[in-house]
Image (tube, rainbow, N blue to C red; front, side, top):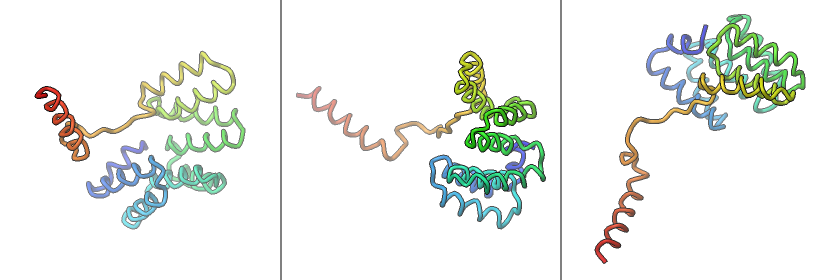
Length: 180
């Protein structure tokens, strides 16, 4: 099952908490993210996307064996959970086993051809192997599938309280130069 499908099983409040925790993880606030994820797990035990996020934190902390344990447990419950397969590939790559990593990324793409992270990681491996044409092709596929997606608020810039001060200062400066 895809991550979105799991997330959609949560009620609106838990989805909001999951997004907040994921955003914290994305900016490297691991401890805060863990706290929020644990609060969700109290209500939704063995929630696979959160277990996967815990594995990611372990990978960042270089606890590769612990991360692999978590990922293996995930794949027992859902053998086609692509983020876990991709993260196993990342562990293999960190351990220097590029062939295994390549196979895991290819497996992830085979299961979910729209999963950009697997394309990105495969493109990086090809670059490291000197296969530049293949690398560029896979990195373009990753970009097309949103491997590095950033979420922006749709509200206008002038509604951001932090920007109002600067807008005010700019208007005053313009008025000063026009009127003098």
